[in-house]
Length: 146
Image (cartoon, rainbow, N blue to C red; front, top):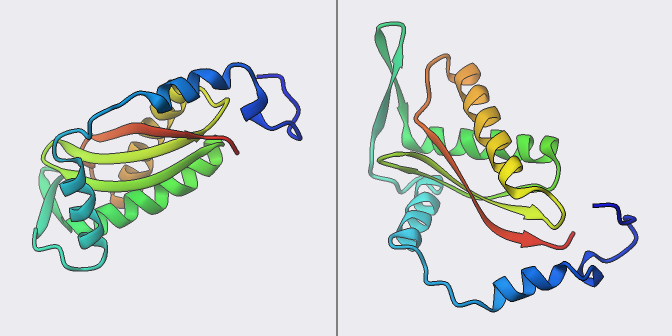
């Protein structure tokens, strides 16, 4: 996008696509509220789910779900700033891996930002843990003007 930083992106005629999407009724995905509440409870220390075993050189590394969620959230926030225009809204651990909910600034290519965050977060988790982390799934859930 070639607009100056001082211009409000909501004045861009293409912003109407975002407004049209916002007017659309979209049902909440099944289980989303429960996952977010579970993630919040885990960060607050009330998570009863115990440990996650990660493969490590023919053995296992045992990490608490709470630690993995907090680490993914911290690293994701740093990587989102480095990518530019990406903010982490929530992180939750599910049976199929880490679920990362993110918002992007208007004008950021959402698909590219999500793919970059997914790859970089997986690499950063691997470096921090020394073990292969669970799959990382990044979902763009909103667009913001600034």
